[in-house]
Length: 400
Image (cartoon, rainbow, N blue to C red; front, side, top):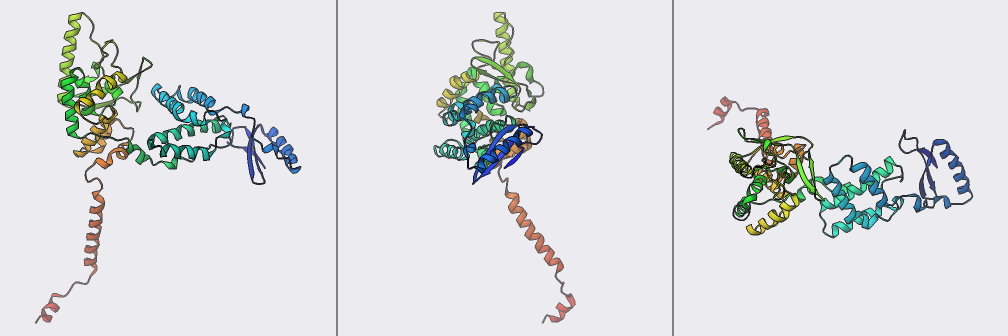
């Protein structure tokens, strides 16, 4: 039996009991109380009383559902964007709580977590989605173990190896071919003329949907054909949420001159319309159809424009975000340096871009075969240099 702090300096002491192959960790309090409890427990075990190894009453330990709400309130809501909090809530409500929600934290076992992951994967759930389920459960239980010391160990701690980050990142990369993009844009011109520029903006710049909808007129540099991405917008429960871009940093991207010309034309039209009705120009480039003081609703754009547009164009259904993947893949196929593509996309690291898209770079790995050939040639030249050179005079005498 050991008495120690699980986390040095925490001033919270634990008993670690190993009795006839049965192990138990129990949080006690300060060191003096822990040492006193150890004396009493040793005496009971010496008398054959193993009831001390029985689980603590479930009522004294919160269930996962109870603790998850606390985790969302304390660890997520104050530090993450509302969209991220919404995503965690969906993972909990749809997957984790139906499986583990009623269990006290102390009753969740690694075997249960392993079975849960296996079941989700066998049900053909996306590996990336299952990885996020496991990561969410692991984060909740990490706080319960390390911060609140409600459990002696994290039963979900060792399941990251189930997933290969590079493989999982690529799994969600879906791209359209140039012919598909052309069909989508032609259909947008024909059927959704008011929103054709928004669709073109996605394919021509690779910006995220929320970044595109968050554009304001002051973000456009007309002379240099640049756009500042200062914000991202989304609607949650009919409430407009304006935030910084995903990386948390403003970035400036290049846009084609033809796109700048389209923006300038739209700006002139909007100015003329504002004068006619005697109203101020809406600051939003892609404004709401019902309230010009607000940007377009992202859900409305997906449901009323994007999905029906793909049907009109007879192009397979892809997400709005896949326009971004399409932009990146087509740029790389054209031989554009990956560092430039990464900068345009606003990735926090070029490694993210490499992990997602390096298989779209033509001949990206041929340096390996070229390197092998060069190594063999170099070895041959070195061998020639070390061989004794024949004496021309000797060769002449030896010739018939």
